[in-house]
Image 1 (cartoon, helix red, strand yellow):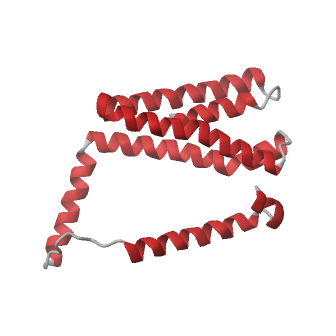
Image 2 (cartoon, one colour):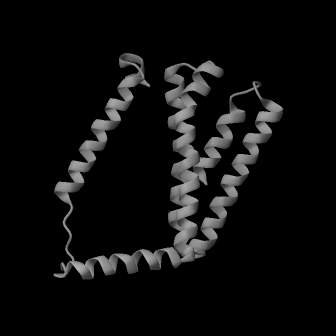
Image 3 (cartoon, helix red, strand yellow):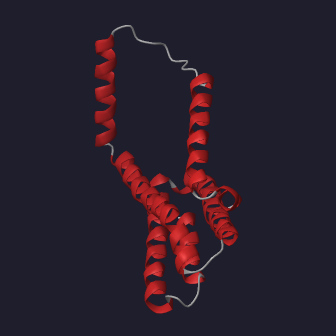
Length: 168
């Protein structure tokens, strides 16, 4: 929010591009592949085809991928739309917007990641995925209920379900 206040909203995209380039350079110059490299290129293409085919056939991989796709799609939709919604519709200042985004992420995503790390070995990936889907579904229902019954009444009708979504 401080960057937005001093340099304008367009500068955030410039910052993200430079940050992305920096991360790409770090990965390019620091990552080393320690696997032995095969000699025949035809064998490489065949191995890639078999690898993709086995991933597509794996129900666990596909559930994880589809779940990740929808969750990150919803999360990025929120990140893109939230400045307009919170600042223009709800009248939130830029600094308060930054705090809302920071604390909703911190109180939603951080406990969810910690809980997942501690429980996924105990309960298994499949049960944790189902729990994550259940939590994100409940947060969606809370958003609908909040919109229908509390719209315009309070900002928490929006921020609470978003924080719960981050947790899931």
